[in-house]
Image (tube, rainbow, N blue to C red):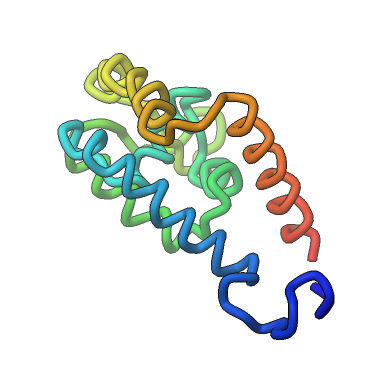
Length: 149
């Protein structure tokens, strides 16, 4: 940002994109916490389940790419989800080199409960849908730009 765009101090905290994104991220994720706790999920585990509800089975490599998490971060999430009976990890039948993640019956059933979450978050945010869609589009562009750096 130029000095003209932010006033006299280009390093003012309130003008930093990184600060706004960090605080917004923490605050939005905190809206999910009371919705996910009764389901026994943390927010990162919820993201894993979203990916699997959309297109299970997935290899660990595919999950890592979709969630933009390194396998070392993803592995403990998968281990915990498996210990709670929501997923199963095993070798892929078509390629023994791949570790594949599938949903258990309990994991598939949990989807019905999770379907209430987006509407509840939308209500708690209290923002018009068009603003949220614009925000999502802008954040998606930021993600794409920063991934290519």
